[in-house]
Image 1: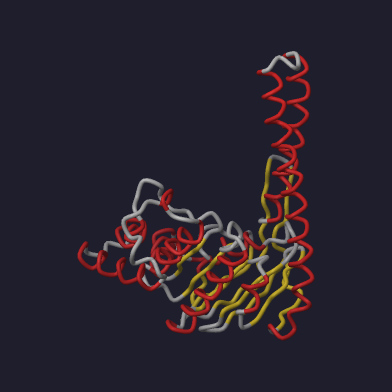
Image 2: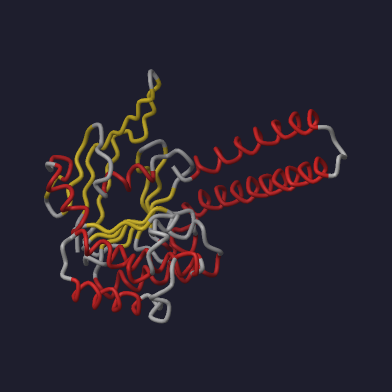
Length: 298
């Protein structure tokens, strides 16, 4: 188990002359063995926070103390070791190597950590059985459902037995039933193995299984509540969910229009000039929607 303490975290991203402040002096304390959910509106700094705690991104200022050690001050060699052995990260888009089987994907973190081959295989089999995929070990990601791929990703995050598990929208690409199953799996692993877990989510089923729920707005934690007080956090999640649904509906209609436009061109119902003009406008609208959706997951 790991205790996580963030003190005065500031993160500024610079693109040319433009500065974006993602975190503004954020403070957070997660107790050993706790499962903490973090929710907030788009652009609030949720993913940035996860990446900093995971040692992927350095903050502009502030501390991240894990088990009494400020990882911000670690030299690169020790930071690599921290990422390999102390923390496991589960991403929204599964982050699996498409050419490797499930068991090979789970073995990969152990290869990087120098674990002997026989031990890697034994542990990978054990973990895949633990997440309910003992019968799918030799399948590649393309042969697995979204829920199965996420289970492989969770097994890979557990491969080196890290005391700290971080997850960034782990149910974001799953349907509600599968999302609930993944949420329950996180809870089971949290309790069974005393893992400290921090999960960024818009999914109500995930927040309900958390010990506490922290709300992040404009780069700071504004409040932390118990699941019994879920209504406070639920309002944020519901608003975001409704926004995503509407954007996805608009996206589907535009894609449908683009496909019809292509068909009309092939049937000579419209001229090439008409096609180019209308296609450009539709693609521009599609890009705007995709940009809005991507911001929700920042």
